[in-house]
Image (tube, rainbow, N blue to C red; front, side):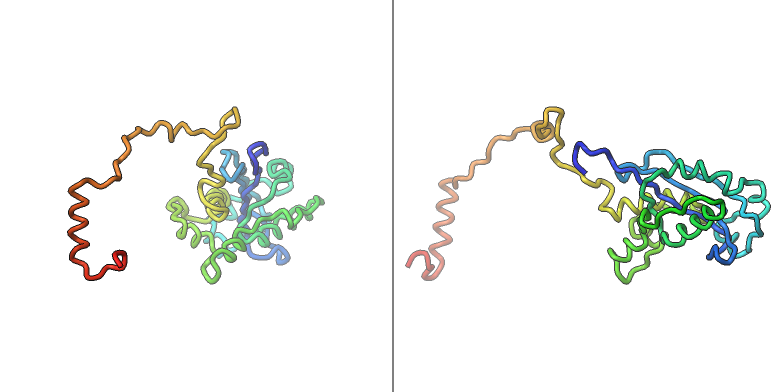
Length: 232
């Protein structure tokens, strides 16, 4: 990205579901999104709980803590679809294990007669981590440990909280907390800002010529050497 290019908008996205496969009747129960601009969270986010119109398996509830009774009072996916699609716009979607979430989102969109999301929009952070750290664990928890990202607020898996953690992981995978950091920052006039360097105190130059005492000590040392090559 050049100085004149606008910072790139991306959406970090996560879902919680009733199970592992929409083809087996499983549904989305929560959608979370965090907007990042130039790899930095903008402060804008989106989270909606969703009534899955089915029971909640105990093993799924143990992961995200969302009960069937709680979800029964939430809107259907069809009722949040427009708001969700407006929020993500046409931005790339940063997702951990992207195939899973894209499969569920597209199943929900197809169910209500909406076009599916293009899989090419997804940036899979799990795949990024496996390429960068082959043979190492690539789960979100493992990456948070690697990058020393605080997960103490994470009791259950929650879509929005996981997005917030993933945004930090993604920043690290893309090169760290100061991507594109320039030591010489351009000023409005187009010149490098050297103010920080010029502000340093100017110290007097250190004399490098040896003193007479140092010369005598050096000669005394050389006189003790047997047949040095530089005197042949």
